[in-house]
Amino acid sequence: MPELPEVETLKRALASLVLNKRLLELTFLRKNLRFPIPLTKIRKGLINQTVSKVTRKGKYILLHVHDGALLIHLGMSGRFTQAPSMELIEKHTHAIFKFDPDVYLHYIDPRRFGCLLWVPNGQGHPLLNSIGPDPLGKEITPTKMKLLAKKCKKVSIKNFLMDSKRIAGVGNIYACETLFAARISPKKIARRINSSQWTLILSNLRDIIQKSIAAGGTTLRDFHSTDGNQGYYKFSLAVYGKETEPCLACGEPIKRIIQSARSTFYCKTCQKS
Image (cartoon, rainbow, N blue to C red; front, top):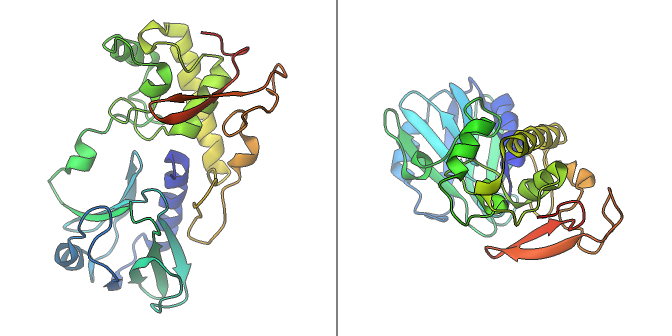
């Protein structure tokens, strides 16, 4: 699944293509993805309207126009590809956009877990209302995270970081990489993380996310930017997906465990509980 850096990379790519551009044509090739697509509302709200800004909240992207915004989520395998026309090129293409003068974007999603929805101006959306602050924003501080973690009796720090209600957009890859960089066990209970450890966690999380954005994200399966290029941060991963490989710091083999049905990769020597 594309994580925050991949989504931020796509947001920036989309902004460079469609900001201040008018949507001229829009074709849907199916009526539903993860949720039913509000075809009429999106067409009415978007066609002949100019994109005033492109924003991100967590792993959601919003294309803003006069009366609202197109809400986009990539799901497990969604992506946008820049194409030469409205003509169908790839299988699993579900929507095709034409912006003036000749910018064509095809939304492709083989697994159909993504979504294209409409958010009217002045109204929130259930998918956005409960999302926590962005890890790159100023709202998150070590003190606030420590206070928030105190309310979680038995939640591990790994699961705490991946809870979008507490911190938006931190997926499995970046939670594993951050905790390794901070030398903190993913099994450690979040409420037992002290202030200095929270400072380390947030500092490393921001640093890793920013480096990944600069590298175009971490392509493991399906993510590509609009120009088809893959992200290259995967070559900088220290622990994720490296079970049995030697730790870069101590040489001991990387261990994989399961937490909340997700694989966690860590070094039991460097990241003692």
